[in-house]
Length: 103
Picture (tube, rainbow, N blue to C red):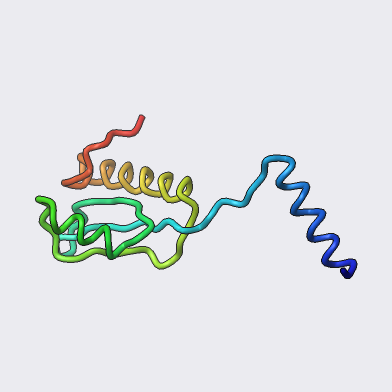
């Protein structure tokens, strides 16, 4: 084992012992749109599956827009909340299908 490999292993062991693990970046922010109007803001790990689920529900929308860069679930939820708050501030209400209020 070379010196560089030992340093990496030592660092990984320290991070595990300290309870630190890098967040998995597997979550996407997405929007459901009715033409150019946002009707829902959400997070998912699988955009295609989530679109099928929404289509099977009573939500009416023309297309889904998934952000191309994944992030941690924690970051995605924060971005979702920020987007809903911004929409609400600009339109006086949340997107049509978002019912959750954030304090």
